[in-house]
Image (cartoon, rainbow over all chains, first blue to last red; front, side, top):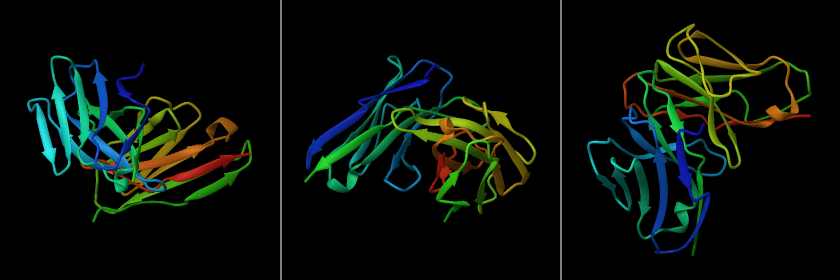
Length: 112
Length: 113
């Protein structure tokens, strides 16, 4: 059973546009929601993260929106750039042992 | 800078061979993880360890085992490699706090023939 559902699987956006990736979860014990970015040939790296007591977190062009009642969270990339082309994974954490439950990933392509 | 290194970037093995994938981290992290990455399936947790000699099964432990004899090193073992274990294997490590970042290695792409 997939703990975190992510959509879309792939996304194509024109340079300067807004990229939006959505995730949903069921387990209300999850208490930390990071997004990871992975470039080809590299391991994933933390991009931005949010706790459920906050509805929005912004870092530069990247924003997480969090809706606790709907159990959904999303990543918005403003002014998308070709250098943002990568695979993005949402995740959720619910145990004291540090494990994360990852979504299946979204492959983002930003056309110049 | 946190560094997680994996012993090989690419590996080709035969069906039935015993395969060792090694991961080393240099930040004294308590937690270490092994994931498998397949297209369309995302990152699936195989095993993780929160202390030396301690291990916990992840979501897909079948066909794999792990060893953590030293804090900085976490090994993934395929006892008898099969073609369905052809995949990208990623190691990660983190401190033990509740919201600690996982740092990933570059991955090992394993092909089992």
